[in-house]
Amino acid sequence: MFGLGITEILLILGIIILIFGAKKLPEVGSGLGRAIQNFKKASSESEEIDVTPSKDKNKDA
Image 1: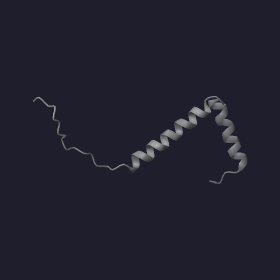
Image 2: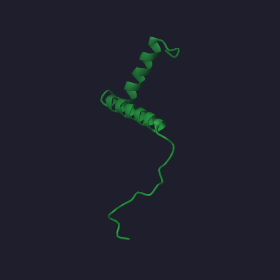
Image 3: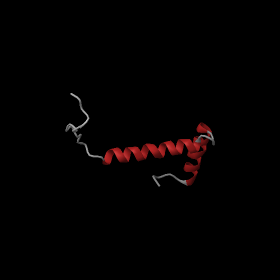
Image 4: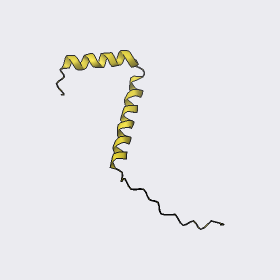
């Protein structure tokens, strides 16, 4: 897995827990998950923007 052994992974996880704390870790994980999900959604959407004017029947002008 990316050239990392179990010792390196445990060390990285330990540092992350020290930095963020055990209580903040779920919030950080869910925020990261939402960010990845939004990035995937944005990258899969079409690049074109619809600029056609919408027909509104309630216009008084």
